[in-house]
Amino acid sequence: MNNDRLNSHDQATRDMHKRDTHNPAVPDAAFYNADMLTVQSANENNKKNNEKTAAKRLPLTGQITAKGLARAAVIAALYVALTLTFGLISFGPTQARISEVLTVLPLFFGFAIPALAIGCMIANIFGGIGVFDIVLGPLASLVAAILTYIIGRAIKNDILRVGLGILPPIIINAFAVPLIFILSGMEVVYIVSVALVGLGQTIVLCGLGIPLYIVVKNLRPRLNILR
Image 1 (cartoon, helix red, strand yellow):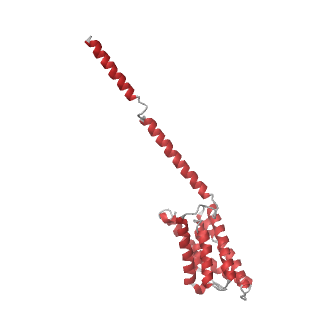
Image 2 (cartoon, helix red, strand yellow):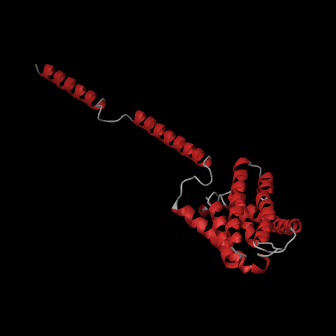
Image 3 (cartoon, helix red, strand yellow):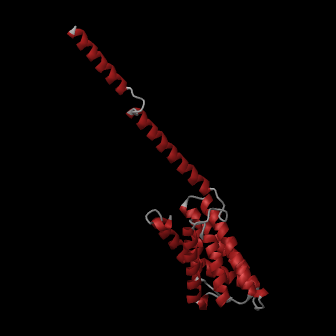
């Protein structure tokens, strides 16, 4: 009788242990780890897809953030400051705007596009030659910045990227600025003025713009503020 009771007790203990072992309320470690890996993989895929989607956005239709607005404001302020600081060579038939060095930035950042246009408008308000300069000058900067941005997105080779990226601000300004002079009543020879403005743009962008491109290219992966 005692042996039967002992056997019954042992069997009940084994059954209880078996139920505890297979209790569905206790997650299986292997399944738990597999689920975590699945979730992590899904999050990484979503992040990559979001980055690809952001990369395909047009420059003026991307998401506007406070950080982007702040950076754009800094670029606009720098453009104004450089233009007015070097005012003697920033305006007139023979000009070489040092601030045009910033026109390489759309190769990296979409928020540089409106920043350059706004900076040009403010600078022309303070030191320009009238309403045509205030309206058409920023428009030329805007078009050039958009084209530079598109080149930056389409071309990955650094030499071609920067070599072609500096062409829009050189060419567009070379033809647009003399037209602004004429519309504003200045007596200039259009073709001569095109050559002089184009030369000034080329000097600034080749002498300062390309080095700035190299600096930003090297610093961007290291500094969070440039990402």
